Each structure stands twice: as structure tokens, then as C-alpha cells.
Picture (cartoon, rainbow, N blue to C red):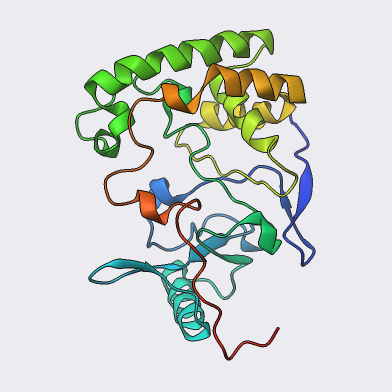
Length: 240
């Protein structure tokens, strides 16, 4: 594809400028591995996160001690000297912190996973209710509606889904991941798809939340989504 200049935006309130489209790397090498060494470090902005502590039970933590501990552990695991963006799981826009939505294609659903191509028996998607048997059959109708709308924009369903996510706010920077160059090119091409307010309403009407079959998250994870995970009480040692 022809080279495309990707827009850059301010993320958050501290003047940190990033690409309008990020790249999710976790599924390339796993959540706890060293950064890819063949890339020029000075040209790459690494973003990683903290906030959900996994011990005997999962809990949300944000104390100064925990942040420092997590940051030092991330530096060691990634084998880098600095992290460009270190951010917390599950925070809302009212705090002035930019939103980094992962899986903007609905766990690859709008990329055709489970619709135009089968879900491998060994795939982690099998743990997601929306990809299971009867639910998947119902959700295929949603894919067809989005596919129809996408054709009006001369786009793919995945590109339209990405455009919808980007339309949610200037401080929204999605991080779709892929292992295929053709998909990466397609994602970049999605930046050219412009969604008006009328288009946004059409997309929302095409996917009423009540029509989606199956829970968004695997069992036990819903309480950690941004809608349900309350910010922990402020540490008394932190001044306003």
C-alpha cells in the first residue's frame, strides 16, 4: 500500500504525543517478555501497564509502592532502560488520562474470525462466550450488518470498527495487534475511514447491545472492566 502519514495526538494532559494508532504486541510474544531488540529503541514508544494485581485473587491496586514495584519489574522484563508510557488499567476519561482500547475488533470478530474463517480448537477465543456455538451463530448477523455498512464506506468491517473506536474521542488511541503485514496495512488504511455523527449512530443501531449474544469477558473478568472496577480510595499520603 502507499505510504500514509499517521496523525499524532496528545495523549493525556502532560504533553505526551503519540501515533493515533498503536500496535498491540502482547499476543506476539506474551505478556511478560523482553522488548523486540531488532527495532531502533529511540524510534519506538513503548507503552505498558499496571494496576491489576494477581495473587490468590485479582484486585486493583494503585498505591505508590505498588506502582514503583511494578515499574521496576516491567523495566527488568522488557530489558529496557526507560518506558515511554506507563499507565494504569481501568481508569476513566474524567481523570484526564487518555484511553488505550485493546481488541478494537471484538477479539478479531470484525476481522472475520469465526465468520469467514474458523476459530481453531486450541484458540483462547474458545473461552469467550461470544465465540461459542449458538452465540456465534447469532452474532454472525451483527457481522453481516457491519459488513453492509462498511461497503458504503469502501472499507472492510474491521476498518469500520476501528473508525468507530477512533470517533469516540481525540484522546482515544486503539492498539490493534496482528501477526500479518496485510492486516497491519489494512489497520493503517482504517485511519482514512471517516465516521460522521450520523454514521456513528448507524453503526450503534446496527449493533444494539441487546442483540450481542454472550458475555463480553470470560467468567470472572467482567468485574474488572472499566464500567465496574471502581478506582481504589485515594492514598492519604498523596497531596492534592
